[in-house]
Length: 258
Ligand code: PTJ
Picture 1 (tube, rainbow, N blue to C red):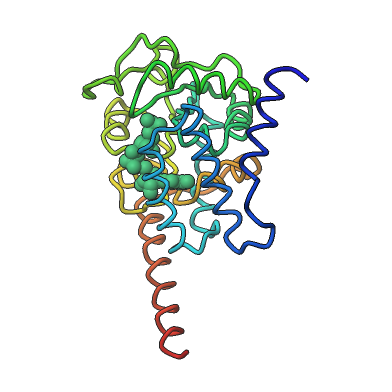
Picture 2 (cartoon, rainbow, N blue to C red):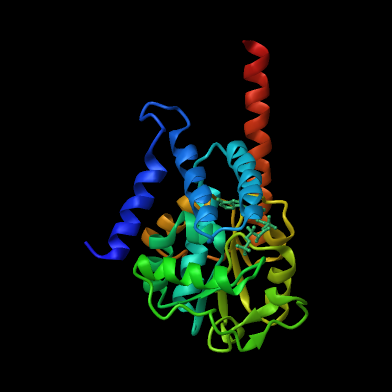
């Protein structure tokens, strides 16, 4: 067994241990374990755990499933990525920890480059994430040697590569911060995001916002066919909010009847 395979086996084991098969929240706890594991191996930032907690709260309100509204956004994203001339997928510490193999496969489906681009950027984390993606089948991952800058973004988080994000026409930036989504949009790019919070600035800035958990959205996008008709992001976001409020009203009535 090679060193890499061994490393992968150890990781997989540590993620699954201690959570009984029968635990009602098993899937959610396994997802958390992946992020804790990501922090331990220097892939995910500690702030990534907090960001995930916020996402979990919204996922709870959504019923922890992909509804038709999210699926429609996913199909719109598939269309935009398949039709792009230079599609790029931006990978951060949360995405790398949660869906490393799936994001590599998504890059293959869309013929998209993968670029590691971090909010809490350190060269060490970038290197570890690149290695981690390579361990999961990734090749030619960009981000290790940035040679361009996203205009209007101060700090190291504006760094990117010329052949990747800088010249991309369509960028998939899951779990993004509002500033960068806005800056990418101001560069004239089509911005696609995955964000469980439909109220976030990123969600409202992007051209296509997928309000779904990244652990469901990426596998879905590996399978879904492109959307045929026109996609309106504001209409879609507004429907998500209506869906959440309708669900809460239903739950509120049920609680009263108990
Ligand atoms: O690895 P880095 O340094 O690039 O940092 C990554 C994080 C996510 C820490 C950084 O980009 C950050 O602080 O993001 P924010 O501003 O907290 O935004 C993250 C958004 O993603 C929030 O709106 C969350 O609700 C949402 N989110 C969190 N977990 C998930 C999610 N959306 C989809 N799937 C999730 N699992």
